[in-house]
Amino acid sequence: MVKKAIVLAAGEGTRLSPITKAIPKEIIRVGKNPAIEHVLKVLKAGGIEDVLLIVGRKKHALIDYLGSGERLGLKIYYRMQEEPKGTAHAVSLGEDFIDEDEDFAIMYGDNYFTPYETMEDIVVFHQKKGGEGTLVLHPVDDPTRFGVVDIDENDQIHGMMEKPTLEEAQPFKVDDHWLNIAGLMIVNSSIFSYIDKTEPGKKGEIWLTDSIEMMRKDGSEFYGYKFDGKRFDIGTFESLREADELEIERKEENDL
Image (cartoon, rainbow, N blue to C red; front, side, top):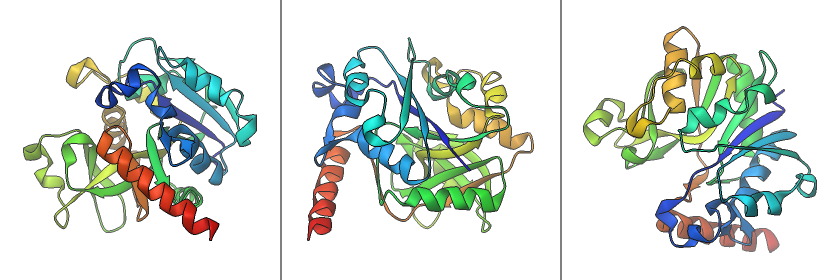
């Protein structure tokens, strides 16, 4: 079973300025609850018990809000990424949190997913496929903001690229859209040895997708779980508004 998760919450949230000059973007409310609370409820719904939250500077409000995690039925631990060195570097800070040959979840702290129970299906999918990793995928019209993948009819991934240009993304296009890596995945702890070998990419940051691609090319099998629910990266005002409207609607329906 997958019992641990690393949540990435160190980003500065510059696209949500000036709000993020006052509070971390993960604290911004989606509906009645902060975005990070939705993230943690997704993980808990899939059986996660222990969470390591990777935070950046000026994220003390996030730590103060979540505390030990007891209120949410989780055990939450914290580690600081002193400088913005990329997603792979952030994950590497949790190497001693994950046991050898253990599968664990990784989720971005600015993600809004519904329904939460999808996480149960993702874990089952991962176990049935028996690969070294499962990436949750979601269709997008603009591939330049995300990591996109090339996938076959058996859900096996044969290539990926982080935040490509439109020209670079063309070979990955499927039915007039792209399948992006939706900020949620399950991977084996062997990923850490590949992070150590990953060279910095754009802006000098170490991308997790580059580490996964290196691991895949070395023979590890990765599969894509095609998520058909609703998912928003709340890093922009537009996506934050859409997520907020959806959450309010969802709560109203549940209260009927």
